[in-house]
Image (cartoon, rainbow, N blue to C red; front, top):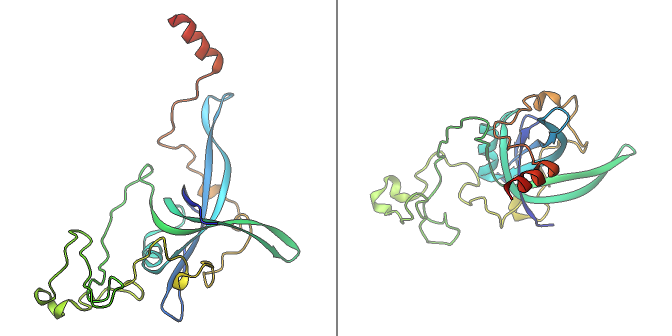
Length: 226
């Protein structure tokens, strides 16, 4: 299943991070995505059912997620969704997993300060031997003679795997189809252990839309206008 989805929700577990023997960074977390519905009895928006996802990021995205997110953060995730069934200790169920292409804070709920991470733009960074990397800000090809170190590995902050940008065409370690292979275990339960209310306690969305029009009132308004 290669459907691409975008989900808004709450980080329900602390992100778990590891680096494989081949230097691939992997970060996993559980995402709670509560729905909102209009309660006519109370004339207010209330939380409906909550969907749960296991989100996994790889390479530079994984490193940035681990350094940027914590439990309780409101985020937006875009990536490839996968549905799988599981069995353990006589129990079974279905889990929904997202191999993330992009993750960021949901700015409808707060403020986030973005910081660019240095990336390798020297020879071979583009994945084509001998070609120099392109500056992501200007689209220009840097002149190696004008950069310290000749433009090869000048960014000392580059992490393993950063030379190969995370892209939608490469999911999982080494671009494997099984993107969850080697990811930090989060368990197969539909929800993380313990009550979930503490990650959903801020139930008043700052961007709640206007309440839906009642069909009867809507027809009455049209009749008066006529």
